[in-house]
Length: 497
Image (cartoon, rainbow, N blue to C red; front, side, top):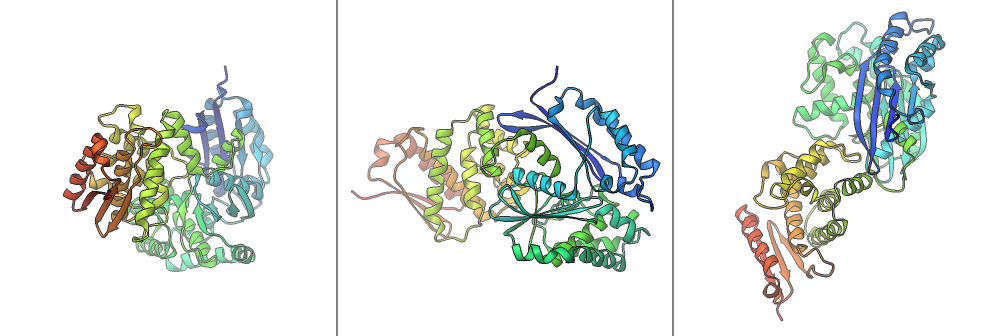
């Protein structure tokens, strides 16, 4: 019997074949399987445009692996698409006939524009952000550029360049030289030039990368102690590190996975050209792309809210959290932040991350009370969180870990989403909000005033409030002692009659 809650998307790319299988749970997707094989179809394209027999066989062998998983999934919950190389191959019918016989399902060869639209849909579903966004996906034989807003693509193009084809053209001698990089970058600029002005004219507020090349670059940067934000300066530094290795078979950078080595320099060259010609200031990694676009397209869920909001909503339902209490703590924490924000220079994401930590602070109670903060942090670190970047996940886990009891500073210091001092401030505010909301009843949160003077916080409560709210008053005094012992004075006062 077919499982109606299972969905599968297969992407027959120019460099790799991917299969994503998910289970729909509480309105969200739980990943059950991610299978990836380096097929390198683009490397098998011959001068006459046909795929050679070796690349065809690699593709069919990979599909044999995928076929078994599809047997338990309803046919209308499966989408299989082929991209750039299969669009180009002159013997595509030979490949497709055998592929469809193996899989038992049709393979759809999508146009470059369709691919770009699906990539943006995947980005929109899995990556948070407001305003216009530029999404970039560097594939094996094509590069997709999309400017969109919300869930709508406004401008999209699929360009004939990719990390496999650029490897064959500009690094065929396996030499990592300044000359080879410059030839690859110059060629990418030439491909980009006809469309660049349209993108620059439309503009965007943020840039998101959604490919293996960009993921590899981010992994290298974090392994080298950098934050997750990609900039042109960092890309040029990586280029010099690659050149210092001399040859492809000698390329060894911390964080670079073995299966990305061969196409890393060519993908890096294309990305450098993109940053340069489009004047991109910075980029973060997307939570998903083509495969996620296929999956969410089948699910047909509402698209009227942010990816982070959908993720938090799913967690609240899945773990049966008390939404009223979560919103009470969130509103109290945000009110506290608003009162002190005027005297501080806070990261733009501080408000948002405090809100999500407050909404999810009881996540660990689904396991048990005593170590609930540890359980909450563990869940956040190890669960799929569409819309949250790796650094944001790390910060969210650190905030939840520090929601009560003794401070665990290492987690706050190790996160790279915001400055450590700001993470500590958010932690202090979250802890205060949780205490103020202990009654779990509407109308029981006292009117308070919070002032910040360097490291000192002064919390002013209604006159005589502590005389009639003994538990919360005691908890606040203990919290004041804990924070003050860390070198962050917390003063509890009461308004005069």
